[in-house]
Image (cartoon, rainbow, N blue to C red; front, top):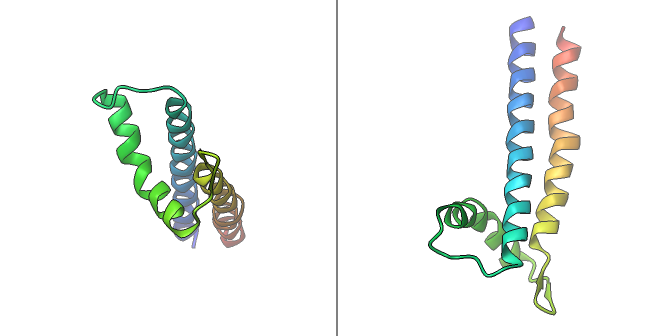
Length: 99
């Protein structure tokens, strides 16, 4: 049973890391959007390719652009915080209960 507990704990740690990194990518994308970035810059292109699929789905589902301000990164932050608080913590708790 300890193997399954270790597996769940490892999955929780990887998911937590992935969600944290994605949150930082969205922060970087939001900060870069305040200036006029060079669209041919490698970093700008990477940020766009990594975040646009998720941001586009949120914008399409909930058109919350008021006065030129895009609120889709805030909605993604809320979802990431929920996933970290609920899913990751639940995986940790289940792993601890199995020991």
